[in-house]
Length: 386
Image (spheres, helix red, strand yellow):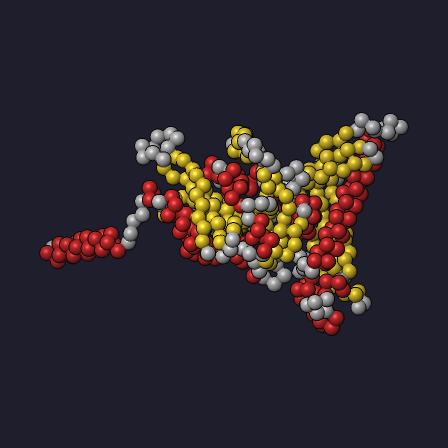
């Protein structure tokens, strides 16, 4: 019994000592001492980094409704670390990036091919790997100052960036993608470019989410090893996604025989084949596009046909038109990328993997893109009809 009591006392003493030592050695930072950064804009002026941090912090300590405020605090420095330190100094709080949803890169940095050291921001300042990264068409500070981002999550922000033709989810990039995708041979990361439509930016409540008026997608930048490779416009981006990814949503509008057909893009997937035909390297791209007929404007319907025959003929023409538009758009993208020397479809790696002996006889890192011939095969399926 005495031995049991001694053991219990020993455990109690150890527990008390542990708590005392732990309290002395581990600093505790209260929430009121911390600036919660939910979005950052990164620009460069006169060789100095300018960091615009949108922060939320308690404006009153009573916890009542409306006691949370947000503001944009700026800091300058020769490095991002110095800029973040100045943000902390200017707001008299410790700036924390642990809850940052969005990183906006200014146009100047994009044009110079200078991108932030995201590895350092993640390891030293807690920037989440899931934070979205976009590029501003002007200064990053303009986007950050206009958007009240603490009211929405990073997912809602991504959902907002949709036009009636494409899904922004397919080409917004996260910090993780920038850090790891770009380290692969032939891999490119795509950064979305956003722009303000005008100074009158308003907030509109819609069911279950908050949407922001006044923001649009402008283009898409391909990034490799931290450098800008090329800019793609909206149509080029949509086409590239059909080859490299599986778009979840979007709209396709075609006109056939004076009839407007609005199609809902249900999905698209592609298979790439790298083979030689004789001495010629052929890259075959087989794409399956699934669409759903959303609306037919049949006011100009040929009255000599029954309605059933009209729609049967129309659907065949629609499939041909969708396929034709896609093939022409993809050819234009391929020509553009070849001219810019951008190997987005992993041409070198593909032929080196499947046709190494023949490929290495004719190809070098300097000339290989111009050696390849492309074949494009398309299957269009209208869901609900076929």
